[in-house]
Image (cartoon, rainbow, N blue to C red; front, side):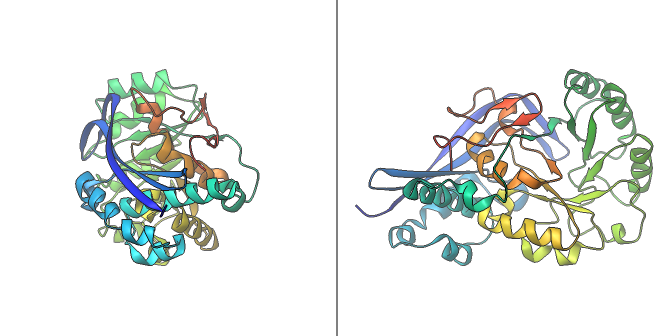
Length: 327
């Protein structure tokens, strides 16, 4: 029986609306890819992102267009040039990793990890809202070691004060999602330093971040929307202190591993992040995150119902995936 690729759209409702500076969502709409041969099945999940011009329907079509190549035996290395980086390639790449592991009986971690994989601490995300609402949510999660706080308005001072006061013992990442500009970034950076914020993620729009090369960074600044693949890294070295690697941007674990290693060579700090997806999307990222400086893989915690089996979360820790989930 020839190797077969299939894909479908799945939707997972969230516990509550998830708000960032660009809008809100109430469900995680994902595309699940499966590669099968002789009873062996490998799966991957991607989260199409409208910010990058993706739709679930368009990504589904792109994945299905590769069915012939998969049937003909295309390798994971050949996939990297056959498709552009993005959600569609991520789903296929991760399905190929999973398929190869199940076919060989060798765990993905044997290749992807330098050390025996272990539980890693992940951030818990506080979505954008009014300062009092965000403080209440931060207080409810104040026992967590790391909070990722969504900001990105013209004036986030009250939000920053509220969250920092409500979670004094947690390290805080502020994620502006490109929502600040040259008129307010200096003020926000200085306040972040006063409040002992640990990291600021993508404060300015991608392509409009030149000022970061010319102003002080009293708090380290991490690129997200400005960085997608290995090819982007060199040009960002004068603007950012860290990068956020997401599999839906890199187009899969294969590129992400290369990107992580090159980022270290260039002196960047490394965050491993995610879109709002299920445990199947997080599973390969947990392996990538084994030696990351910051981990933000709490997507399944936002779900009203996750895949089963899913990843195991305990307090601040997320454990590596079991073989029946992925890898």
